[in-house]
Image 1 (cartoon, helix red, strand yellow):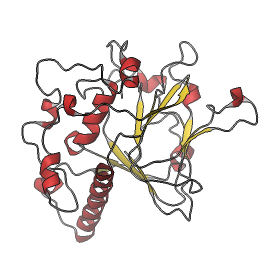
Image 2 (cartoon, one colour):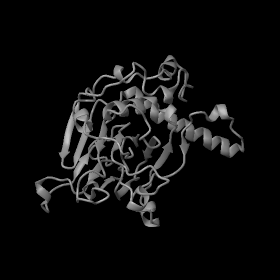
Image 3 (spheres, helix red, strand yellow):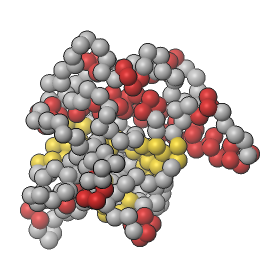
Image 4 (cartoon, helix red, strand yellow):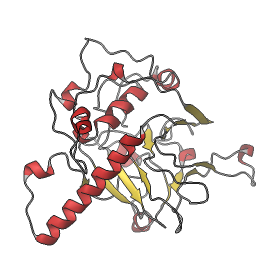
Length: 290
C-alpha cells in the first residue's frame, strides 16, 4: 500500500472495528471501475459455477466485518486477521499461480506464441518486489518465486483488502502478488519500506505505508516458514527475548506498517525488520502467501 496526501485519521479505528466504520457513498460499487460490469473470469484449474460467481463485481458493503483479530504487537502495530480468506479462496490463488507457471513453461518449451485471450488476467512470473537493500547479496538471499497478478484477476484480495483498510478504491495498491516458498527457501532480513531515493522519486508512487500478507497454506510448528520480526520480541528487548514469530495459518492475514512510527523524521520504521524463515526440508506443505 502506497502513501498519498490523504487523511489517515480513521485508519486504525477502521482496522480495529473490522472495517465497520467505512462508508461507501453514492450507492454504487467503489471498485466498479476495477472489475467492470462483466469482467473476464479468473483462470483456474477447471471451469465451474464458482468461477462465474468470482467474476461478478464486489460490493464492499456485502463483505462481512472481520472479527477474528489478534493484536500481536502494539508499537509498532502488528495485527493478525484469522478470518481474512476462505479455504476455497486460498486454494484458488495457489492454483491459478501453478496453472500460469505450467502454461508459460509449456509454451516456452514448444516455442508457441500465446494469444491475448489465453494470457488474459494470467499472473506473470516477473521476479522480486522492491525492498530496501538491492545489492546482489540481498537479492541472492531471497529464494522464493513471485507471481505478479492483474488487479482484475484477484478480485477477492482487492475487495477484502479495501474493506479491511477502509479504502474505497485501489489507486493506492501496488501490483498484487503470490509468492511460493519451497522446502529450504526463505527471505532473509529486510524492510518493506522503500529507501528515501525510491520513495521520493517523482515518477514513483510514494512510500509504502502498509504491508498485508495473506497465508494461503498452513505451515505447522517445527516446519519453519514463519514471518519473524527480529526486534519485536518480549522482555523489553532483553538479550534472552525471542523474536515475534507469526506462523502461516491458511486463510489468515498479517498487517503491519513499515514506514509509520519509529525514529522521528526517519523514512521507515527500522523496528519492522523481518524475514521469512526457511521452510523445513521435511515440511508437509510449501508456504504460499498473497
